[in-house]
Image (tube, rainbow, N blue to C red; front, side):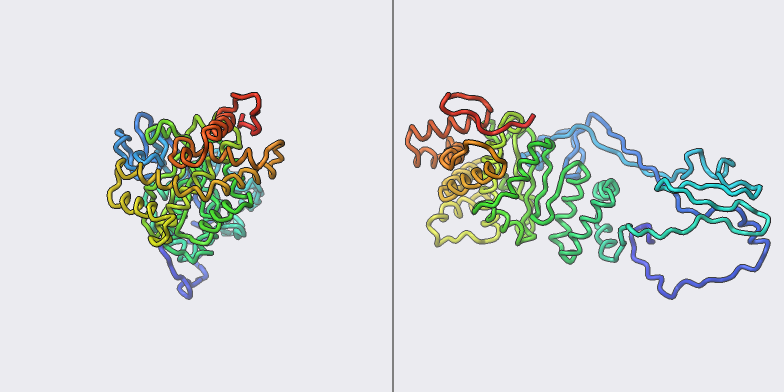
Length: 434
C-alpha cells in the first residue's frame, strides 16, 4: 500500500518475536536483507509529435488547442519510461558468488549506493543472520499524508516527470506546497512546475513564474528583469506574488502562426480557469537570437503589461465606470464570449490603447535594467523611444507621436532588435547573446 502512495498507520500494529527455532535461523543464515535497486530507462520514439503539456500524443499537431494559441512549442518524438528491479551489485547479483562476503567466514566489503563501504561478517557457523547495517536517511523526502494524496492525483505523464526530478527539486515543490497549505491553486501550479523542471525549465515559486525558455542567456535576461526595481516591475511582482491564483509562463518557439510580424505574444487564452490560471508569454526564436538584451527587456516589459491587463480582467478589477478602461473591458467581454480572430484583434488593439499610461513605466524599467547591468550611454530619453518602438504599427503609436518621433522610435528599436546600426547617430547600446 505504501508503495502505491497510500497512507498506512502502523502505530502499535507491529510486534517483535524472538525466533528460537535453530533450523529456521539456519535457513536464514548468510542471507542479506536489502532494499531492491531500480533502473529507469527513457527512450525517445520518433515520428510522432508530443503535446508539451503532457496531454496526448498527436500526429496532426495543428489541431491541438495547445498549439493553436501559440503557447506551446512543437517537439518531435515522445518518450517511453520503463522501470525494472535490477541487481544492486554491478557484478551481477549475490547469487553468483561474486559478493564480497564469503562463506568461509572472511570479512567482506559491501558497496553502498553513495559510494561508501560497509563491512559485514560472512560467517555461517554460528547461526547468525548477516545484514547490512541500517543507516537512517537524514536527507530524504518525508512522505506525509498530504504529499501522498498529492502524488495520488497524478496522471501517468505527471508520475513519470515526478520520477525524473532530483530530490532537491522535489523538496522545493513540497516546501512550496507546505507553505501554501496544499491549496488547490498551489497543487495546480506545482503540477505545471513538475513538467517545466523535468523538461529543463526553471520555476520561481515566490513569484509564481515558470521559465521554459530553452536559450540560457536569453532566459537569464528575462529573469533579471524581475529583479529590477521600477514602478512597473514592482506592480507586476506584487500582482503575481500576492495572489497564488495568477501564474505566468515564459516560453519560446516559432510564433509566426499567430502573427508573422511579432516578436512576442501574450496569449489571452489562459491555462486553467478564471480562478486559477497561467498566462503564457511566448518569444519568437529569431527575435531572441538576434536582439540585444535591451530589446529583450523592452519587449518583455511590454508583454508583461499585456499579462497585467489580462489578470486584472480575470480578477474583476477592470471597472466599467472608469472611462480609461471602458473600451478595454468591453473588448475582453466580447473576446471571452466568442474566442475568434474577429474578437482577438480588437482586444489586442484595446490593450495597446490602454498602455498609454505605461510607456514611461516600461522606459523606467529599461533604464533601471541598464543601470543595474552597467550599460554605458543609455539615457532616459533613449529608453522612452525604445519603449515606444515596441508599440510600432499600433493606433496609439501613430496618434501620440509625430512622424519624426515615430522614425526615431523605429530606428532605436530596430537597432537594438537586429543588433545593427541604421543611423550613425544611433549606435547599438545593448549586448546580444552569443
